[in-house]
Each structure stands twice: as structure tokens, then as C-alpha cells.
Length: 477
Image (tube, rainbow, N blue to C red; front, side):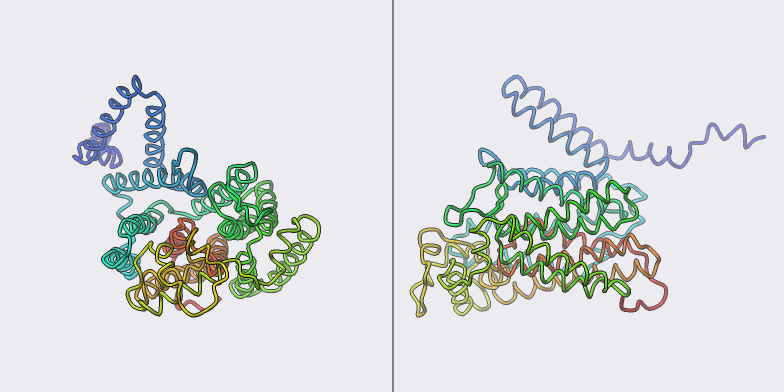
């Protein structure tokens, strides 16, 4: 009887936790900050209505991220495919800052249930240490950089990219969250391609006929469409999705392959070939015959696209050898001269394009000096870019980050398999193949400051935390 009478007066543990959280000073601080921003927006509305609307949308965006961080991460994933909009506004940077703000507020308001899951530092302390060393070395390189202002911008971009690791780790808690990010990646790539096709992107007048994106050059777009095709194919194989959704994902995968070929990116084609080879080994036992069949179909489909759809300029660009020099080989030659001159320190982060002219007058034929003197270009090779700007220590640290992330995806796939989680295994294997293709394509493209690459690396690390440890030793899959 006493138990019955006292039970209505005894708050449940959930209510008790909520009451305690309401009186938490951190909660009061966040509520006060939101209220202050709302008041400021009200005052600004009478002066600059447009600015007030942007501020209100940003506040709503942060509120959405606070309620479901993985939803905000998916919106950010779409936004990074639009690095520059009208009037020089960077949608990707704005979305990134809002995402980081929501994550920081979430850290302050971290629920008791969230503390049961180890953070990124507890899960992968070695990776966090390498990331910190890489950013620190990049910041230190400003001491000898030709233009320190470029270095500061580059360091900030790398710092924001590295922040994606703890953000993604906190946002993705189950496989369905990962599926949403994959879908957002595919949608973002297709949207930027559509915007570029309709006039939102700027085509290179020296290479007409190449498909480009809204602020995304053809070489980068080719790599992103390659990744999108693999992620869409992964979703098409998911048994957790409905039949219409799987059919749509399969159609998106085929469309991404066609669009990738229309970019005329030879690096993306190399990446596609590497992805097909990697898929054969990553697919696991019992799936290699199917992957070989899929590879044959992709090759035949690519030939059909070239014959029937691709513009003559694109076909000529891909099939001819680079005997006249497209500028890339000259940039590589000058970039290697930087490496020879500064093998340990490099020329400073973000200073590749402004330093190439200092290494032009050396022995060796340069056919396209215009890309070094009049229109300085980036390295068009992520590995040469890191080596030339940050020296051997920077390249080693970057490769360690890449290897840890790629290995995490493979280990996650094995853990998912031995725990009987087919869905998680599929997501991990698909990501491993996508990373292999993008990293191969990056041999012909500068992706060091690409948020797409860092996002995929962060997801690979996070997948390892979602997989349940296998019983006993994990055999190779």
C-alpha cells in the first residue's frame, strides 16, 4: 500500500535527469545565448530583412542539428558540393561553421546516455594524436612560407576538416544514420552536376565539352561522381531499404557512372578502375564472382557511353596521350623541384601555386608555363601537393591518417560480418571501395582541402565504433 501511495510522488529516473539538466548552468547558458540571438535578429529585421532571414534560417539549422546531429550532418554533406555561390558566399563554409557550433553545444549538453559510449579520444587515441600533429606541422610551416596569409587560410581549412572526425563520430550512432549520409552524398553530387549543366558552374574555355559542377572543376567532380556511384550501388544492395528506394539507388549509380565519364577526367577513370579491382578483394568470400560480372558490365557500359553519348572533345581528351602537355606534367615537374629543394620542410601549406614560379627556370622542357606564371595552378596530385608544401613529415602524417581510416573500414566490415550484421558489413565494404577509388583519382587531383575526402575518412573511423567486437579472433574476410 505504501508503495502505491508513494509512487505518484516519486519522479521517474528520466524526469529526474531532465530536471537536473534544466538546472545545469551549461543549459542555462545555451538557452540564454539562443534567446539573445533571437532578440538580435528581431532588431536586425527592421534594418536588414535579408540578413535577418539568413540569421533565422541559420538558427533553425542549428536547432535542427541539436535535436538530431546526424540530420544536420546530412544537410552539411549536400552543402559541401556547393563551395561558392553567388556574391562569393560559401555555402559549405557556412554549413560547416553551423555544424561545428551545434556539435560544440551538444558537447556542453552531453546527455548521460551519451557518456556510455566512448568518445573519439577513447576509441582512437592514436588517430587523434596524428591529426593533431598534422595540423600542428601545417601551422608551423607558416614560419617559412612565402605568403603566410595563404597558410593561415589553409590551416583553418585543415582544422575544420579534422573537426569532422569527432563530429561524425558523435553524429552517427547506427547504420541507418550512415545510409542517410551516403544518400546525401549522392544527392549533393547530382545536384551540383545539374547546377553546373544549367550554367551554375564555370567551364574551362581551353577544354570545352567537359561536364563541371557548381564551383567544382571537372576533375574533382569526376572523383565525387565515382564515389557517389559506389555509395549508391551500396544502398541498392541494402535489404533495409524498400524496393522503390533500392531501384532509385541503382538508377542513381548508373547515372553517376555516365556523368563521371562525361567529365572527361582521366584521373576519375583511373579511380574507377582501382575501385573495381579493390571491390574484387574487398567484397569478401562468395561475392567475387558477382563483382567480376559487375566490373565487366561497367566496362561495357562505359564503352557504350563513349560511342553514343560522349562529346567528341571528351572522347579525344580521354583517348589521346598527353604528348602536347595539358599543364599537369609541367606542374608535376616544377612541384618535384620544390621537393628536391625542401625535402623536409616543404614550401609551406597553401603555398604551392605561388611558389611554382620560383622553380620554373631550371633544366627541363616546360610546355605550359602559362599555368605557372600567368595562371598558377595547384599540384593536381594530392600526394605531391602534401610533399611539396609540408615535406616528408607532412606526407607521412597524412598517409598514416589515410591508412588508419581505410583499415578501420576493413576491420569494421569484418566485425560486422562476424556479429551477423549484414547491413553494417555492406556499408563498411562499400565505403572501403569508394575510398580506394577516390584516393587513386586524387593522384591526378588536389583533394587535400576537399571536405568530401575528410568526411569519408571520418565515416570510416566511425564505422569501427558501430561494429560489435567479434567473438574470438577475426579472420580475414
